[in-house]
Image (cartoon, rainbow over all chains, first blue to last red; front, side, top):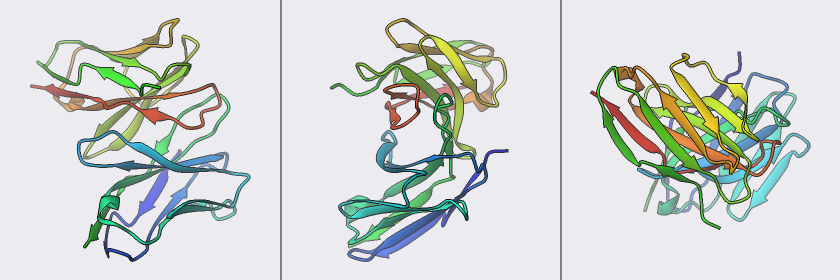
Amino acid sequence: GENVEQHPSTLSVQEGDSAVIKCTYSDSASNYFPWYKQELGKRPQLIIDIRSNVGEKKDQRIAVTLNKTAKHFSLHITETQPEDSAVYFCAASITGGYNKLIFGAGTRLAVHP
Amino acid sequence: KAGVTQTPRYLIKTRGQQVTLSCSPISGHRSVSWYQQTPGQGLQFLFEYFSETQRNKGNFPGRFSGRQFSNSRSEMNVSTLELGDSALYLCASSLDSTGYEQYFGPGTRLTVT
C-alpha cells in the first residue's frame, strides 16, 4: 500500500548549522511532494513543495530535492535559527483527482542557540 | 484572504455520542480534505470532497462520514464515538481538483471520555 517513511524522527542542531530530513515513498505514481512545518499547538504550515518534473527547488534557506528513480526526497534547511524548531512532515500524493496526502511520521527538529 | 477556519476548536464528548465538525475553506478553494492527527498514528487521510462529491476516502470505518456544500464548506460527522476517536481533526483546502498546495485549518481537538 501507500507509505512514506521519514528519517530521522528527531534532529538536534546548533544554530547556524544545516539540517536534512529524508523521506522515501512507496507508490511510484506519486508526483507531488509537499513539506509541512507544525509548531506546538499550531496548524501544519506548507513551507515548500516539489512536483515530479523538477529535481530541486529552493526558497531562501530551505530547499527540497527529489530523486524519482530512488523514490527519495529530502528537505534541506541552511543557517538554522531557533524559530525553525518544530515538527516537519513530508508527504506524497498523486495529483489530478485524488488530493490525498500520505504523510511521513514527522521529524522533531530542535535548534539550540 | 482569510485562512481555513474550523469550528468548534475544542470538543468533549462521551462514548456513544455523535459529533459534527465544520470546515470553511479559503475563499475560492473548491477542494476540502480531512485528516486525523494522533500521537500514535500521525496524520491520516479521512476523505476529500470536490464540488460536493467525495472523491477519495481513507481507511476509516463507516462511522466517519462527511459532506460538502455548494459554497465549498464541509462538515464531517463521527457517529457512535469511541475512546480511540480522540484526536485533532484537521481540514485542508486547495484551489482546484489537482491537489496542489493544501492549506490546513487550526483543527478541532476532540476528546472522547
